[in-house]
Amino acid sequence: MQRDDDDVAVPCAAKSLKAAEAAHQMDPASTCRPANVGVKIGTYNGSTCLETFLAGVWNFAAYFNWTERGELFHLRASLRGQAGQLLWDMSKKLTLAELIRLLHQDVSTVNQAEQFHATGNRVRS
Image (cartoon, rainbow, N blue to C red; front, top):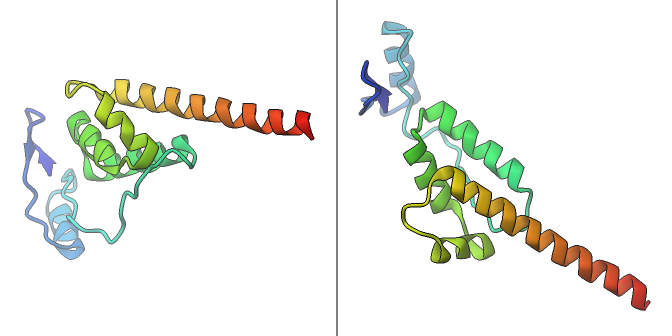
């Protein structure tokens, strides 16, 4: 997607990296990107570092010029397992910032529970 002067997303005609590069050479200000760059955003299930995963999402968002709505869509689509359970519990009107806040709270709760169990196991030993 490209942006026009009114910051409205317009489709990019580039079907390949070569086409995107050609569009950029004709218009250096072009934000045209190929649809498939051979990498995937991946999924997040709550068992890995949230900040690392979000950094990856933001990298994709910057490269493909996603709007906040696009970032929210892709973030929601990438949640699995325990993290995906948040989708069942949240409002359809949840913003990107609210979802990230909920993910941080969820990860914090899981980490506290793991620390509690780890500490409890050491005390009993």
